[in-house]
Length: 583
Image 1 (tube, helix red, strand yellow):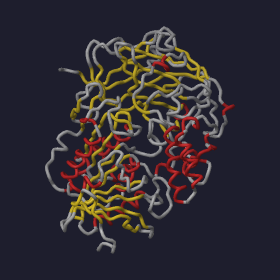
Image 2: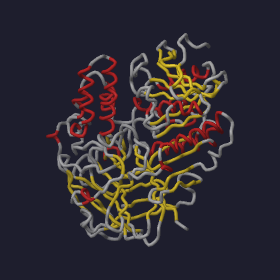
Image 3: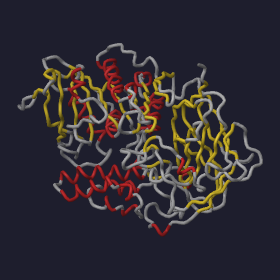
Image 4: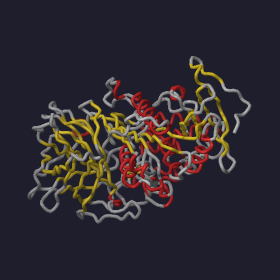
């Protein structure tokens, strides 16, 4: 293969790197994808780092990573490509649909470029993590390793939905943002302006009902948003793109990068664990690494707003160089000395562990208790390791017209349009429509390292409703800050593929996965669980009717009386993964 006639240019101030812009890469169906190539000057051959993204190859996710020229200066040919139908690439854009086949073709094309050593690694965050994983399922011969960052294990549960509830703030704002480039490609200036305004004003649009007429996305620019709403169960529409359906398809080592407040934290951890146990080769099973930092989805800076160079995005650039040097250049860099490296919140320190969860961690069951008035932080709800006896239930009401607001959380992708990160929970915890269960002050410091889940025994007067939970830490001054949260839509309690209504006033056991946590809780601090029936707009509101998803208007919503039981027969329980602190 020879370069096209266009000459390479030298980047100003970086004479050791040559750049070729808009090089066409032919897919198997004849569609050409626009590609920028950053190459170390000279005649030597270098391994390839491929980044495939829908957000403009010229920017190359520089909001998170070092510029491609930085990676090229470390001895790599960096190939950055616009996905099909995005920016300068030909074809029709539809999320996820073409990434496996296009990724395979791009990998093999990149491996054959002049100056390529024939070995390809991939990197990229969020959707650019999906482009790696989907391509890797096809086992392209030249793909040696991948570095998927802040990305999911599938695109139904953990991306568009969570336990049956629509991830509203993320799904609506992301689709709105995607539509802007489609409008730009069509030369529709008015649509670009309208979608830009809708994106920046997204929080006001989240209240719109019915969601299947969501005004900013009513045009033909974003047909996939309506498709997402038309498939509210885990069916074949979603199953075809699910990474976690069969990890044996993936045969390459992978560096998984996640953030404690990222929307895809659970999926990133699931991919790491799944490939460790079920990867399709010894190289895959033995070559998995998980790194979790104190980040939201964007940007990669400590979520508490402090300046800490040891936890900034530059850390990941150096992790990736070490990873690629190990697997693409054959250097021993020590990147696999520990399978798991995490930045422990509150301790503000990177720590290595042998597994997820660490083998030294032990499950701790914190049971819910009260004398029947756990409503709000001033109520009598408590958490303790002692199982419940004969205790009265707690009751609250939920009306979809007055949902509990999301204060912080694990949404995406910018804090101006979605609830993200840690936040003081005082305004929410003052409401009687939440139940608050708080532990006694800890006598000893503990580390919570592992997955959190809640088993909730509950009844509702509705035929469908939601149950939400937030795990918080409470400092000695009484300030409560969220660590993790979860939801389950009642009709999906047993199956994400085959939802069934509930019987009003019947008690069911609901399992709510809250996801991974990595935090030090110091002596004198307390743990807190907040239970309710909404967390809006992180998730859409359940109208309590049991009706068809997203078809009903605001007048359809009904009030529900919600009951949480915690007695010998119904031991509602929060399970934590606790690592004793010995120093």
